[in-house]
Image 1 (cartoon, rainbow, N blue to C red):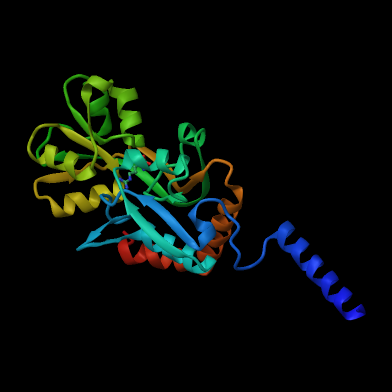
Image 2: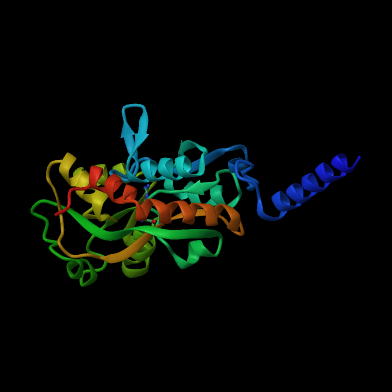
Length: 258
Ligand code: ARG
């Protein structure tokens, strides 16, 4: 009788502790992560952060997400979509996290929550070789003269529309389509994050990257607003992966220090 009571007491204490503090392995987190699967929304048109290697989506973000999932003991499921669908589909809980070289931005912060930053991004300018555009000021001092291509809903899109007027900005769902339009002579410049810009210039002849930097930004992971339990775990994992050198190793695999 006494023994049964003690067992009952121990069980009650354990149950209360689990309810209050969460139990290892029980993943009581909203969204699919509670089933041990972390779903990731990305736009795999953005080398070296996310891109297709044959049928497979690879890149810095995908590997960091996998390392986070491994750290937390979850499986990772990656879903490719147009960039402009990422924030809304994480906001409405369809996917647990979004990771796509996503810049920390005040407007996005109103509808989703950001993790700690894991990388720096730079908005750069790509022009055809031989273009009269040699720096950012050539665009700013000649508004209306040039058509500028951007990826829809990116920070490059937002800044370009602010600086040059929407009538001078061509929006494309995929980065690659903006690059195609540039090589076809339909637009005069593309504003894009620097590392992807370098990758596109390397694989498309006749293009060059300007030296001037348009803006400097921070990349972070997004989760639905108020999902602080998931974000805390992501931040804990990010911190551990920064400290043990995993993030640096992943970045070094894809980006040569220069
Ligand atoms: N850093 C920019 C932004 O957050 C562009 C990101 C584009 N990412 C992509 N996977 N296509 O708006």
